Figure 1 (cartoon, helix red, strand yellow):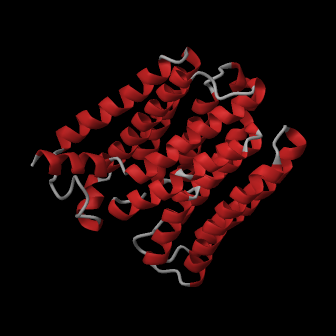
Figure 2 (cartoon, rainbow, N blue to C red; figure 1 turned 90 degrees about the horizontal axis):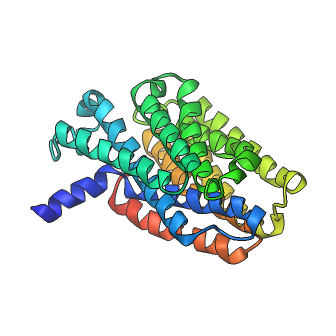
Length: 297
């Protein structure tokens, strides 16, 4: 029984998604490392990984808490509507995860702690309010991911001032994924998916332009960029041409998982180390394996 309940807790936080958040932290640390030539203190990197696990997991838990009424109708198999965990247990679990995320980041620096607090507030705002608003919802979710990337950058606090504008990349991409997910249970969102694909093209252009704006090494990042774009373009094209719930949900799933090669591109390009991009990319098979056992959202 205890082992079964542990599986419910793990399933609740969408572990495949959490792995992609860890990739954000490594990419952020690599971005800041372009100033110092390293990834910062290993202990700080570990604390920031713990922080993102708490923040992402807590955000997902509260998303399901606020969606409980709707999930009882549309997704009765989920943890809360199925009664596998109680609402009070979920509230405690989600709160502890968010507090863990903020506290772990604060141990690195006050800058990291402030960013973690902001990410937690943005996640709760999305969960409760903005996801129901067509334009604000995708932007809000994108800001959560931008904050997560900056959380990694904050391993060297002064680097946040230098590279904060790079948050536009996750804002655009997660906005694209969130646009794709709108009405995924119903179908009939061809225009949203097409717009999302347009945002992906815009991100590709931004990545190429980074060569002129920073020390980004495109030749090291290119292979990861191609993997990221093909994962998204193929799934979204299928969702556009055959706009049915199954294809839309697969496009959302591919979008979430493809965050890992996108982070790998930034890690390799900013660090100047191909092996670091490959190390981040190794999180992809782990995330895919978890996605086969647990839901991706």
